[in-house]
Image (tube, rainbow, N blue to C red; front, side):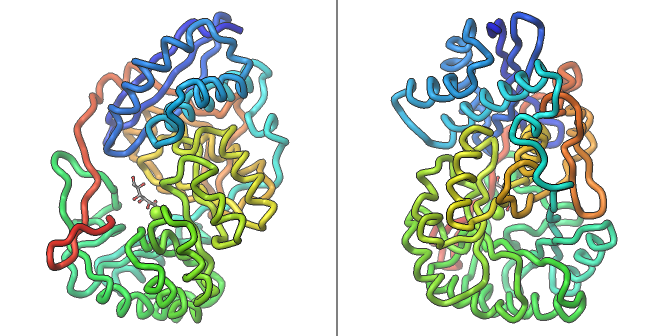
Length: 402
Ligand code: GCO
Ligand code: MG
């Protein structure tokens, strides 16, 4: 089953997406997401300039061999640009294989391990009471697990909270906006938010929170400890994870479960975190962690250490990634939860999909392949627009982690 065409489609139906479409000699095609928020064109170039010429003529059925060819064959291993490109090839080839066998992808991944996939939604507000209202709204829409982020007294803006009204969207057009951060203000405030949420919503609702890499390990230990009475489902990205051993310090101080990995692109990024049981959930996902093939390797390794999956699912991951992730989630034994931020209706129209949400859970649907398509004519109406993620500084002007 020779690959005869591979095309990189860039579009911006509300935000930028990069999609790889691979076509075989018998007319089947598969799609893979290659979106890297704020760096989309680098991946598009890596694909068009370096991967596509090598894809033509290769056998689409040899998914593992193709993965190894692009990983080992580049010599320069890992990194978000390379791995997002390999991920796009991998997801497209799994899509083709499942279509060629006329089966939904999860059936090829071992079949369903559960009836549906638990997801969490994003509630946020400008202050505590605003956030209470947002959580109530999500609960009313059926969510059983809700991430809560709030504006912090004394800080003009912060991660996860929309500057106006409406939904939070990480990237902004033109130059990167600059935020000002204070770990002290955050650490004082955050337990009051979750105390209020538990008081309002009781003990049953799953509450999650994203620290977005902003604390030092010892500060993260303090925050985790202060949140213990409110038994979070997880505290996400408490500190940057380049130094994996730094999580030992957090673990020594708190039993609040930890989720990490949305920026990881390889099993080597989380080897120590998993092996030493320094985390509870691994957040790597299809597009940034080398596709379905590599993500399964990470999940299988994590299973040995009772670490569960919690795939990243922000709006900067396209519906193609979401579809593929849901097949993975449904099938993998050590699934934990899936993040779900619904896309805009423009995006949903460009990417018609079989997956659906109801009563706090999602299902990938039963269409052959991963069940996500692209309307290329419509996509062409939304050309790329430069956009950046914000940057973050401390109040004295020092650059900090965003
Ligand atoms: C999350 C993430 C996102 C990221 C975004 C970056 O937990 O959903 O932290 O909001 O910031 O995906 O591109
Ligand atoms: Mg996050």
